Length: 459
Image 1 (cartoon, rainbow, N blue to C red):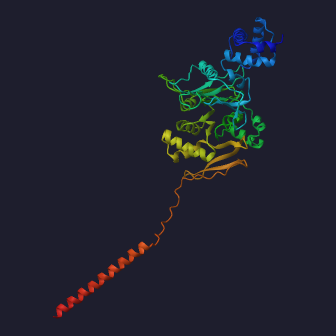
Image 2: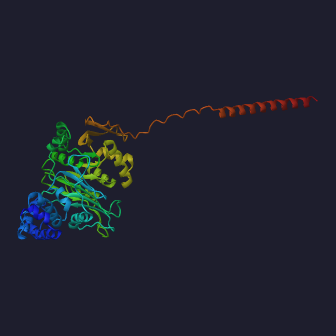
Image 3: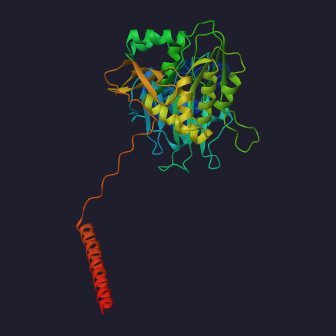
């Protein structure tokens, strides 16, 4: 009898028994540790074949094992449908998102748009099982009481898993078909080599060499760009310009950067635990602490608040070198947005924020999407035009043909135009004529009065 016949006749009860039999075998093969997910598919197949043998079944073929292996991994690791889509099993995607409708979408590495994974149709139970498996080891849960959860999956060096950023929203606050909303952003598994940027055609080789040289000369660099444009990836590659002997302190929320340097300390922000008196730890706290850790370079994965920007600018102005990223679609927008959040969060006047920007940042690198691919759009030196004004100028070191021209930002008062003379209208003319007529009548009456007085005197 062939295995095809057996699987066709396999009842739900026998399928359940086969998975029950294979579960303990898989755990014994992994040593009760499922962290090394790159080996799990092969181990699951081995466990199923052994379980089938114990149950006196013919070993299944490779094609027939796929569905059972996925079901077994869903039981063992709890990730289910996500298992075969996540690193290190699959390194094709940088983002996975599940919508409240139950549709699963993925963004391939280097692409701008998401692709609908139509062959993935997880049930509500499978989705919640996967989410619980993601959040459980972190001591977190998504409930109606805590409907919004931000978390980070830790790095697993043994399996090559670099970690991931995780966002979960409960169905109570997202409209749809009863599914939660899930977003996963996977971190780079290795330090990004500068040559990889050239392979991705992100920028010319000469420009990359100039940037690495600038970083090596302790130039403070701000990488700006929109969401998902590759700011952190570019920052990681530029860090190769920092001498290997440097002492680096990096502050992230969450940790994403992998550096090839031996002397590195990482400070990671964390929110205050719900219902706890334990305070949170912010990027601002991390920058302030980093300045007391004898760094030669300070790296900030992403500046999100005005308080963090103020602390970072103070650090850079106190002779600390470093790099950071910021969400903005260009240098000018970065300058304006930083001024807004520094005023809103820290009360820093706009003129002061611009002066601090010029003193703290020497170079801005703009990255974005062109023709559906991530590319560096421009590199700009930051200049203050005079010592007495707050005018900021971005001088292009290099610009892509797709980049827009960057205007100079001036805070000097604009010339006030002279007010225009009011237009003559019919109403105005009538008023003037009435006034003239009144004056004439008054003069005539005055002359008549004088003539009457003269007549009376003669009489």
